[in-house]
Image (cartoon, rainbow, N blue to C red; front, side, top):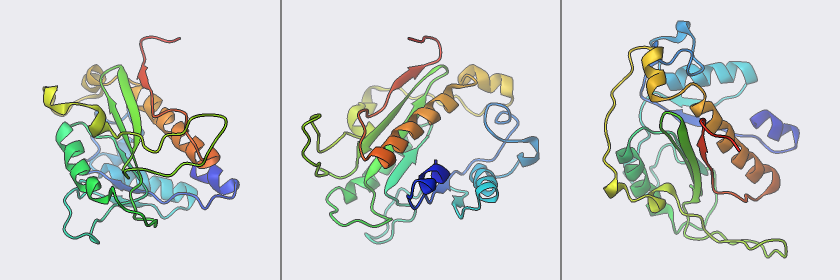
Length: 219
């Protein structure tokens, strides 16, 4: 998407990836890792490969996203679009506690959080949801459709107090990992999320906040 945007005159993307985990045998095959990357940090492995392939200068941080604010001007990792693919509720709630401090921001720079896109999935189902971090974003008048000033983020749409979270633990093999997440669920959701972002960049709008998808039923 970065290359396509640049070809259309857009300045492109700068991405910083946070992940404390390392590549294991359970990741190879289900995700885009090779045996040679076993033991490497996931963020470092992916970003290094992308930078070499495209000539980018994206950044990798081999740690969790710093969701605790030290000072108003000290929020490492903040960007215009925050994307999360986390497997626990606590990390989402911690992140939202940080992002809420920026809801009344009116200035714009590369460190101003504006949108939060969250991915979540089970074995064969999943969802993507994008929402506004700011209270409201002024929308231009339109005769084609009704605009809305704000889209809720995932923590405003889900009552996490009613969800009993279970830690399934790490998978020891690819076969075991596929019992928890089927082969194409992650890639299907990733393509859907990228399409939403692509249309926001390309057309300056989105008609959808995100889908609920399943691998077991089409149509």
